[in-house]
Image (cartoon, rainbow, N blue to C red; front, top):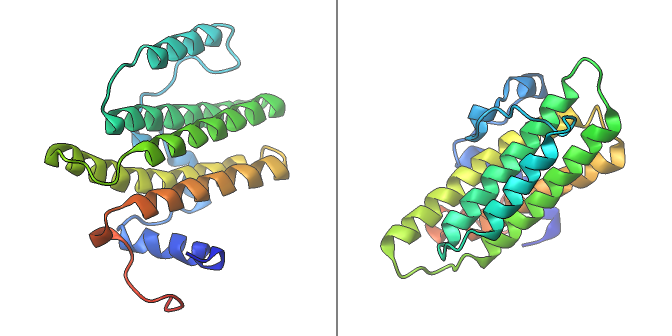
Length: 195
């Protein structure tokens, strides 16, 4: 796929997957539940957040599941949690810009790990149940990345331009990876240049 066609693919995928774009004015309305996670009670500005991170570390370290879809789904939940934490930090009365940037960078790091998990999922899975779960996960993740983009756009006004640009680019790269991983019958149809 040509690099110049990526924005077109991104825009068309929104329509094809049946997920509408979310105007930035509605980004604040995106809540944890919209991303499939619980509303966080402890944010990075809380001294107890260290314990939350330790719990996350051990939870990931002792996850011996051989199911690549389950591992990717857990990582996607962590990505959602990290983004909601950054969003909630940015909405506080006294916004600590450096803390919001650190939270956004942590989100970006977790998106990179999610991309690795998606790439590790085998394209052909022998178990029909796992193949269906993989397809469902990829479709859901594509929709969630569109919501992520709306929140990132909102956060972009509260962090430095280079960080915002880097995070948005990482988000688009991950979204495109998800689209590439979708089964052929769900991929966009058409000849190059038709868009």
